Each structure stands twice: as structure tokens, then as C-alpha cells.
Image (cartoon, rainbow, N blue to C red; front, side, top):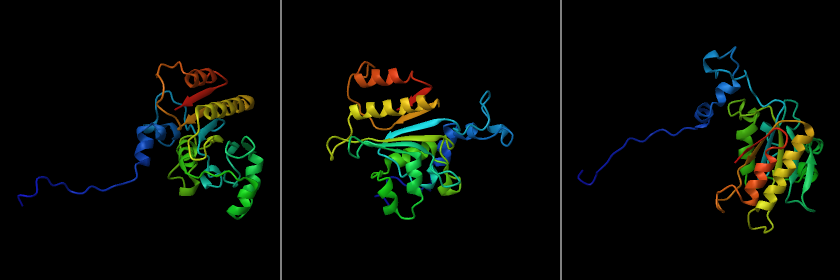
Length: 223
């Protein structure tokens, strides 16, 4: 037909999680050299899993009942959860409180004890990539540091219809870093909230603040 100028066969779509893990070198980092010697990185320790470390997620919260954030005995992997949106001035939930909530059979009963929710799902998604243990998928969709403990901050906004500001972000980062330092654990802190304002020179208040606290304890900040 003269009306057709180009043709292309349809291509099959697929989930790219496994390819992404491989391209990011997560697969060889997690694998043991005793099982998969061809996938090891020279000089890299065997079987890194995040055990003994903290992963901090500053975001929209977390679905703390999700199986990927629980241990085999159903207890939580969340060391601490600070929900800035709950009054007064945010509410702190320890792992003991979260475990009491997880003992309940219904969501209503759980939220009566620990009412923090991830309304958008973004924070849960990010936490799954960083540290989910794959229990919900029989290990297929395991995250990076799948044996790390989690410190979660749900950011709040002064305007209920708006987004959190840099002040809330700085308070959250300070909370996570100092909690990890007090516990004596290495910390990888993930910030998936942000903006592109400013000069990008590294001299803004937020930039200098993050640069300073990255020197506290054994802290790595990922943005």
C-alpha cells in the first residue's frame, strides 16, 4: 500500500528487574564464589547481603506489613520509623511497636497501634529495591541489601496538598545518621525526594549540610 511508509514487528515486553540487577553488578556482589565463581568481581568479598548494616529511606513512608520487610519469623526488619506527618511534630515507632502491630490479623488493628501509611507507595517501592528480601516473590525480586535493617522516615509537608521542604529533609537525614551512629552501624542513606533548584555549586544550605553529615559515623548518602 502506498499509504504505508514504515513497518515494524511488535516486540515482546518483559520485566527488566533481573537485567537491572545484573547491569548494576548486584548479582555478582550477592552471589557466593563457591556457587558461582564466574560471576565474582575480583577483590570483592563473597556473598554481600547488607547484614550488619542500616539502610535509611527518606521518602513517602513504607508498608511495614509487606513480607519483604519481615524476617522469616515474621518480625520486622525496620529498626525505626519516624512519621513526620503524624502529630505532634511527628511520631516515632520502634521495632517493638511495629512488631506488636504485625501480630494483629487485620489492617485496622495494625494501624491502631502503628498508624503510619505509605499513601503513594513510592517509599515502599524504593525500600524494596534497596533492601527488600524477596519473601513476597519467593526470592525472585530480592533487593540489594536484603539482610540490612531499615530506618524509615516519612516526610511531611507544611501544606497538606504540597510536597515536603528541604527543612523536613534535613531533619530526617540528621535523625537517620545520628541513629545509625548511636547504634554503631554503617549506613547507606537513600534520598529519592529532591529538586533542581539552586546554583548546583555545592554551596547551598542543603548541599553543605549533607556534605557535613556524610562524615558522621560510617555514612554513605545516595541521591
